[in-house]
Image (cartoon, rainbow, N blue to C red; front, side, top):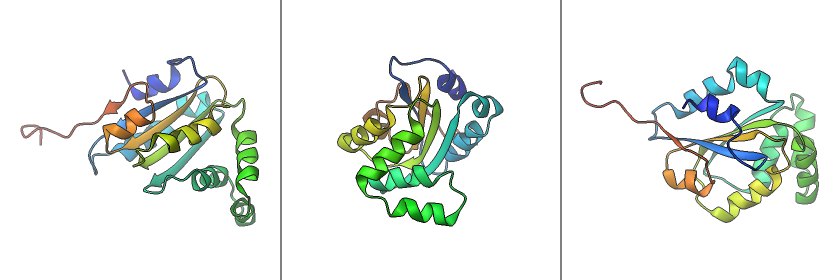
Length: 162
C-alpha cells in the first residue's frame, strides 16, 4: 500500500494517527516524504500542512515553537513565538490544530522516549478526524514508540540491483 494511501485512509479510531518511513541514513526518506508532502492530492486533502526537522532535540516546547513558527513568514511574528511560556505555547498550539485536518511531517526523528511522544501527542490529539503525522526515522524503535499504525520500511538495493 502506498504511503499516500495510508495518509488518506481512515486507519485509526483516533483523530490523529502516525505513519513512519524507516530506513538507514542517506536512503532517501526525507526526499520521499517531501514528494508526498508536495503531492497535489495531499495538498488538497489536508487543511494544514506543516514540516519540521526534528533531529536529536525532541523537547515539547521546542517542537511546539517550531510548529507554530512553520507558517509564519514575518520575522517579528516568529520572534513573538519564542517569547511564549509553556501555557501560552500550548494554548496557541491547540488553537492552530484544533478541529483541522492536518499533516505534520516530523523529519529525522531520533526520540525513543515514550513519555516525550505522549506529551506531543497530547497536544496534537485535537486535530480533525483524519489528521496524520508522517515521521522519517532511522530506527524501528522510533516507529514503535510513536505508535505508528504501519511503518513503511525503505530498503537499499541488493548487490545485483546496485
